[in-house]
Length: 311
Image (cartoon, rainbow, N blue to C red; front, side):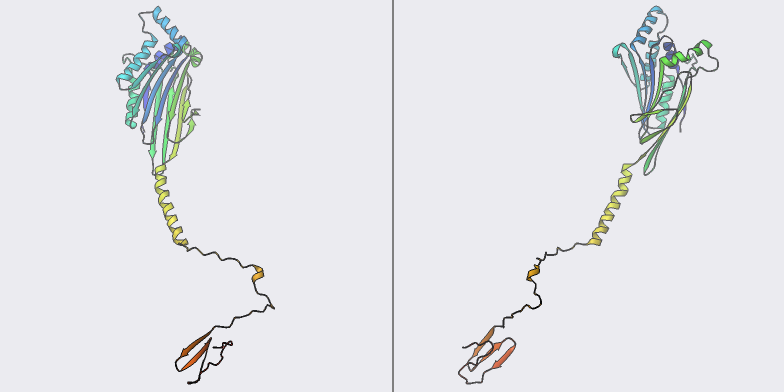
């Protein structure tokens, strides 16, 4: 478990922007993989009307550091720390983005520390807002569990100027914060009033409030399930083969029509067996079936036997 407080040095500049702003959105994003690695991101979006107003303010007070310059310095500091940054100007607006990949919890903690210190003048204490983040991804043989929680304090503290406090409602309609996360598996929101959007969760805390958020997730590990199911299926198939065996095909018997079967009263004629005659030099023998009869020796003729055979 890790917990890091980010004292948002940049958020003071964001408040300054908001006082003259039309629309400003700050997005803090995290995404986590089953092995605990992931990516941390920060994006700041200003609409075209806001950019124009800030540029006019900078021209009117050339000796003052412009709010846009303060933001750009923040992202330049992140780039020097190894973050991947980009700058776009869609439709006259401004979008600044920074991303930082991390391999484990220690890398995530370093990313938070870099965000806390980027573009910050240490001689100027900033306690406008704070952000605490905590995440954990654990793996067992069959499942991966994830958890993401934290607190963002967008209040103005105890010693804030009453005028600034009265501007909270105005700022809430002008400055928008989003906390986004994507955990491995099916995600459930537990605290903070977040909503499921796509494959992640989004919380939208309001200026002047303290928001605690929590989401967790669970995912079955397909590889582990296959390691169990494949051997089980092979064993079941082997047992089935042994029980059934290999049966030889049985020849089909032609059916006998009912009219071909003998019935009571039918006369069945049996053909007599053939007579086999065997002639010897001194006599003859006639065979009819199993009956054998001999002729006396010296007899010149053949005696009729069996079924009337004359030779």
